[in-house]
Length: 471
Image (cartoon, rainbow, N blue to C red; front, side, top):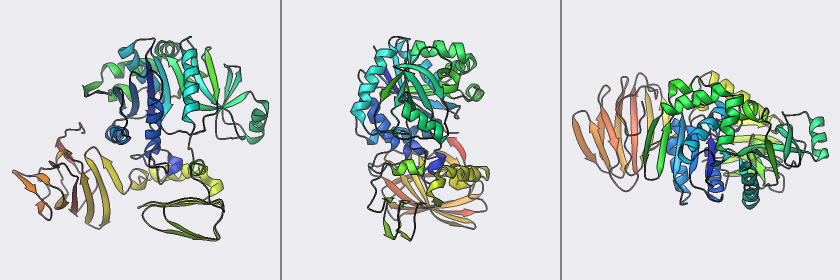
């Protein structure tokens, strides 16, 4: 029987700001071992038995960075399918769309194992053993959840009450006293947000409890733009049809109403990395209880979470604090207020602040750019283009650009002229001129771009042609 892991990769991870941004969400964060949460999810998925295909549901704008993340693991992958959402509509829509795609390819009996990309599982062999138990139940027509044996009275997680493998009820985040009773009873488990089911089982339940969600996803899938090649299928859901699908979590839409839900209790070293305090648990503490990454110098500092980037962080006399430094934003908070980081993120987003959306280094399908400096009427970028990478043919109304090649070879379209530029060579592109940059070589192309003009926003781009299908 076909086993299809489904990785759900979305969400801004607002409680992990400033490391997590809308364009670089939580699944892409390095957890301190050189691997991102998405890469860990990919490895877990490939460790499952009898995998015939891997489906990833993610935002359209994250397709190429997701492909890079998978490629960088160096692992041989099964056929890959990307179900691309034009916008997030919660987990019920994501799972419905993935299930419809799997049914279309493998039939109603195919078994799906749904994995959030922003969770961590430390004990992979125990996880695979739990998956094997879940598959047996799923083949019996059960909708299977994974229940984590609680290690503390956690108030930030949902709980599952179970009688053996039968789910009695789901309980939302309880208060401390209630959570203590749950842990003491031995009948309650943390809800890990992972699921296993036959495609037909989920589609029947959606038809019963969320028919509008199912129909909206079916319409979006039927009108989707599809492409395939080299073992990869891309299904870009229709924007107009998908944008009206009701936002609902799979828990509310199906699990809490379904009569045939089972749970596999397990101890797999699970964490949803839902805050900086949870992230710190992935990092060994020093003798004073500090969890640190990057270069730090500490004096009389205790029980703090300190994450740095390219510069030294010094802390003196600090206790129970969170300090996170990135190239363009610094977070300072009391450790007890870790959950309130989401409030700060939401305020920045409501104000349209760039730091809620982008890092100083921004990933694009063709490579990356880093803003080195900006001021009134100028911006300086460092641009890296992957071998074979090709920017869109574009034009800017309000800015001119100077390009200087630092290393590699650039193929440049500048108006009616096409040229090759080598190291130390440059070109000037006036505003209103069509232009394109491409790396025809086998090494990365590195350039410095100096922009000048009245308006330097990233939305001042008119695209005429783009190999990556962007508007």
